[in-house]
Image (tube, rainbow, N blue to C red; front, side, top):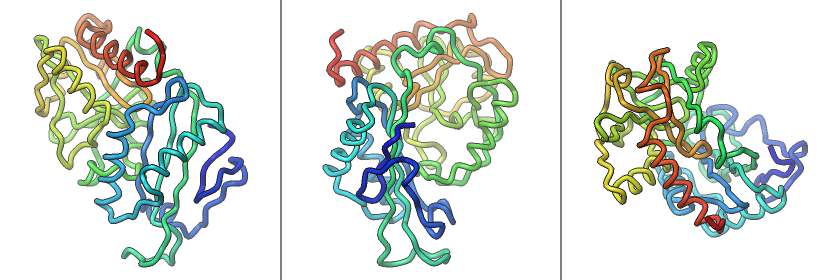
Length: 286
């Protein structure tokens, strides 16, 4: 994590940034968050990030703590002060400090916090060898479309996957895969990419949105429907997407080898095309 964080209008050393114990984010998990990737010190996918942030804020009746323009200026300044080249920016908005009552308090100023972190997002070695996933029960609430900071169920699922030696958990509800604990889940069968349609059951992943656009551009068929664990086992390929992993191949699920156990051609094409687009935005010559 970078040494400089942003908190309520100030850039502070991370050891000096403090939030009240009466902040509703601390007491209730009453807030939302976002993560955006950074390449060559440039924020990627700004428009879809702002759209999703605006939607999450609206769904929980939270005011923007800054204007959209000020938000982007803050992120760029945070990147500059931390001299971040590649990685991501985490930011969260909570309802703010108020007496502990369940209903939303009035006339309370939201708390805005943001920090940066370094991560190798372009040359991720996992993209070459693939990851293992295990299925875990989906224990979350019914508004998974909101990017809420209340992530206890995901932490429990991720920990279960970790104890089983897997990189990711694929959450399952009624025998069907919803999504990864921190990613969108996809399988490939007969050249078609299959991923669950948007609803309250899953987060509207930004990489998901962009990968669907890329697939359409290159005439790769996308089928938006729920798929079963059995279908995942029998898929030709499987992969995930998220803000700072971009696209990663899943080569095993519950110990069962997917396809030939290597990153497949559809995954390779999707990752290549996304990275090509990302590097163009970041001003990196190909």
